[in-house]
Length: 303
Ligand SMILES: Nc1nc2c(ncn2[C@@H]2O[C@H](COP(=O)(O)OP(=O)(O)OP(=O)(O)O)[C@@H](O)[C@H]2O)c(=O)[nH]1
Ligand SMILES: [Mg+2]
Picture 1 (spheres, rainbow, N blue to C red):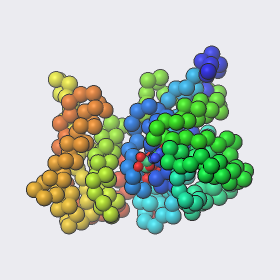
Picture 2 (cartoon, rainbow, N blue to C red):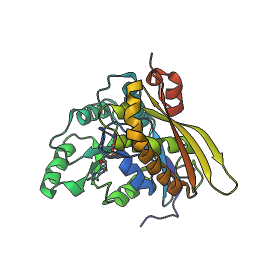
Picture 3 (cartoon, rainbow, N blue to C red):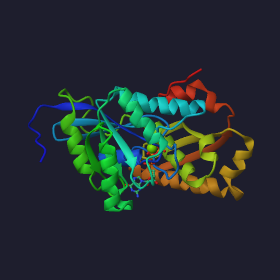
Picture 4 (cartoon, rainbow, N blue to C red):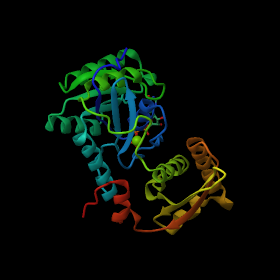
């Protein structure tokens, strides 16, 4: 049982890990609401997404980060820099590892080395235990234990919620004493316009394949609240090349129609009111090199 009587605690816990480890799934499970988008594809999360939760006397601000990998392009470099900045600025670091992998990947290796260099103690969460045999899991835990980096090792399934409550309770107790930073009922500090754009981006990631998801971005251009409680949201999907347009639209506009319906349905459920979503598709070749996009996401733009 967590005591609510103790001193108030508050702090940041960064979720770090290789692409696809399940960081965003875990953020949503920890908070109990969908705040960060999730797809089976790598490099889904592009910036730091905060989810806020109260556990006993503690207010924990979880920071979902982009996966850490060997970046090549500017956007990738900015994503990885944002992930490390998330770790640097946090009171606690949770390293998430996809335990269903055959062996410890290079990306995770790089994170372990980075944490050692920074002399950061961390908590390890072996994720996806729903998809792995128990004996393999114990061997994996022993191998990570030998790194000498982890205060505690948790075995969880972000998908089923197994072990997530224990992890949240444990982290709550590690936070420094201090006043809460956010109002009690606040779950995120992501502006609704950005959250809405992320929902559409998730549907695009799920529907489109190969390079296309990485060649696009979504922006909410207009948001209009009506007296009857409904909301009109206009968004633009920016692509890099004219040839990508036909794929996003689909035959007779079928693909974009399905995307719109999926995004609108989720937004309506999320906002708990009727949503009229309008999607526009435009080519803006240089969006990936436009400092304005980076600023909006809170990413650093390197020269
Ligand atoms: N079986 C299983 N799948 C999981 C679990 N957690 C996450 N996944 C799946 O793993 C995939 C990646 O999940 P994300 O939460 O998007 O992973 P991420 O670490 O945020 O990925 P990036 O943002 O791309 O770095 C999705 O298909 C999830 O459904 C789990 O506990 N068990
Ligand atoms: Mg993610």
